[in-house]
Length: 259
Image (tube, rainbow, N blue to C red):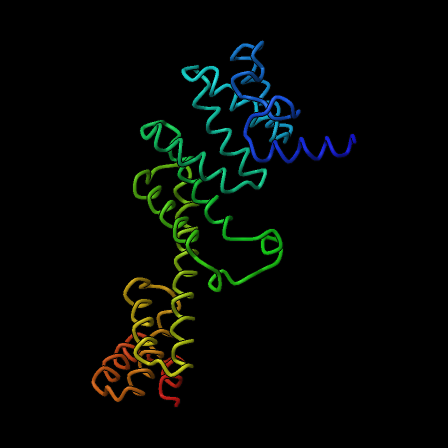
């Protein structure tokens, strides 16, 4: 009977955000109600330093609800982003960062929220095992990667002198190459299947949108070979000339001439 009641409590608490009958599900407006705003905040920061992220989140959320205009409330909202991120709740970290950006677009620390939103979007694309073992991100659904790139790009464009801008820029370079590789792999797939118009078009996307990427010469090779298969002699020659001009002594010239 005790086991049944315990399971019943857990089940109901998962389906409802507030239920007084199940321990551990508490309204933030009631949590730590006897403590002052400073006490809630300081003990929240102490929990954060101790890596007790769940306790830190509970305290900072309580502070946000009970003292929405408190002097430490906005800082606590930034702490919530970090605590969710460190706990591996990347979707919640993204949501918290997004909320802060929209609520406080001119805040002194809003650049941090952009940075953490970018990181959270990036890590949402990885499963737990994939974070441990090396994987090729270009083979994944890249929706979160694109969002992450946009977050970092907005940070760099809006806050070029931010402490986080250099790291964000390095992420942009890496993610840009991931996106380019994804397009290249799609182009290669279409070429192998004999869909030469599609392969040429996807290779063109790499060249247009990812100039400077190390994958551009491979995309040019795909274009040359696709146009040859389509008997588009002038297009083939134009693509080959671009390849020859930019990579004259490379192996890509030989690859472009292979059947």
